[in-house]
Picture 1: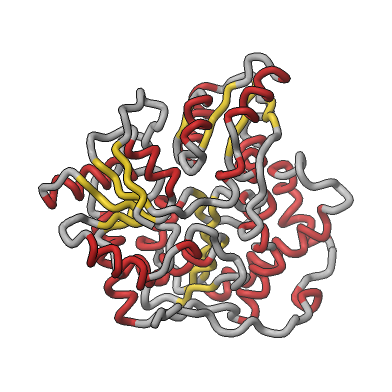
Picture 2 (picture 1 turned 180 degrees about the vertical axis):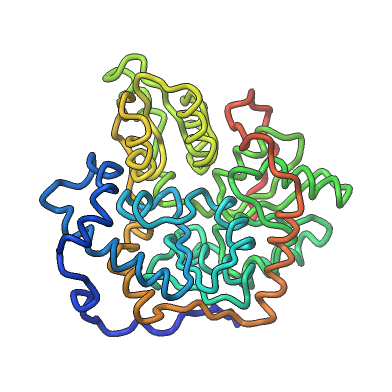
Length: 373
């Protein structure tokens, strides 16, 4: 029987308006300087409503000793205005482990909140919306991992962090797109083998396999955002925007990486833009990534041909405010599952940080891949 660690039931709708301060001089004094961070995305007429929410969130944060961890796919009003720590999955996992705050609000999806709870079992971890899931996390169960391990008993199992705590508990080590190459090579060397099982993202696994000497057994999960991109789309955009630099996330199909100028995790994409400052750039990933870079690079033309993650978009300022005000929705995990899942996460965190996030645009080898799902 599959055990799914769950959040409490979603509470009935409550009155967010009752939590908001009046739109007075004090609110304006404390928030007006923030508007420059989001003026490309939020109109002046909409700003007062946003400012009241930001003010209320900051007040409750102080009262409750809370830290907000915001993923790179959060919209600008969260990423730029209330996110205390912003980054990719690896950065947020590390910061969750180091945080001294008594409450963590996860501005991200369910598996990220579970990861924070696993690393911080004594802290209260809140997820603003329990329906903020992930197509990758939904693609595999702990029972399916156990069945794979019975078929391949001497092959280490590497799981992407985009999985449930139950799945992590059955695996040997976790990885992110920033450190996937480092992780698979390290675990294979530790076990003295030339083959690994990599779950659950088929595209990431294939892209890793093409850049390592290892044979990779892959599961057929995929990200509903990144799997939609195609090489034909890249070609069409290059024709419409001559000279555009194309950056792709490694959850995209291999054909897309082959058509791109650079591929890497969200941290790697961000670093590439910071370092190269192209005249125009296309990010083949979740739309909010471009939104969050525009304020830092107003001179760069960001070509918009991206996809929104419906799960990330469920996280809102109102949801964060409700989480802080009413303690919704606290992550609750089975202790035994959490302990075993932590071993896999700790195995990843024990490895040295990559000097730079993995570059998936290195010349690819012939990939040795076998589909096991």
